[in-house]
Image (cartoon, rainbow, N blue to C red; front, side):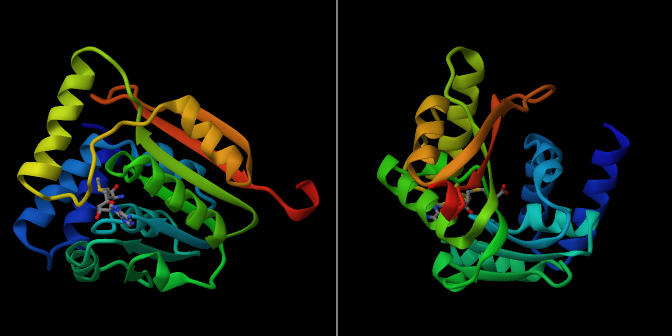
Length: 222
Ligand SMILES: C[S@@+](CC[C@H](N)C(=O)[O-])C[C@H]1O[C@@H](n2cnc3c(N)ncnc32)[C@H](O)[C@@H]1O
């Protein structure tokens, strides 16, 4: 285990000390399995950031640990997850149930980390459209997903998610459908984004993690 990961785990356990033991285990497992470093690297270090489908708020906790300058906000469809996020001590972060909580606000950056694979295509489109409405012109959308693939890695990833969504019900969702990179880039383009970049961030990880960044088009570029 590298020193950054070990330090993050100690920090997360401190943040989540008031949450239940299962929440703390979940936070630790998420930090180990998901390349949050790659996600945080592209999020601007200051300004207003919104995490959609924030779960118990791990990304926002890690961002707060790196910088005190961002205004952090997280929304999730699950009331239980929002309750867990409220139990975490993440200085200055706000949490709310559903993206409606931030209607009318504009953010410099918005993230979606492992949310879309749980949704049907039409729902994915709706969430991307809502993220676009929450961004100021030129703002940055950051999406981390697991890419659809074949072979044993795909089987392990699918089995793990089916366990989380349908058996243990740790995660709320209707689907387990990993993302198809080409279709998703088109979806971003159709929702007013440009400067779309896609890269694999799965070195040293079990799953085929992929990171998308895209800028909301300015009115003058439409
Ligand atoms: C796999 S978890 C990821 C949580 C968090 N982003 C993380 O990286 O730890 C997926 C999250 O998406 C949330 N979610 C599912 N559908 C959603 C929707 N339509 N709107 C907002 N959140 C949603 C779930 O409740 C769950 O907390």
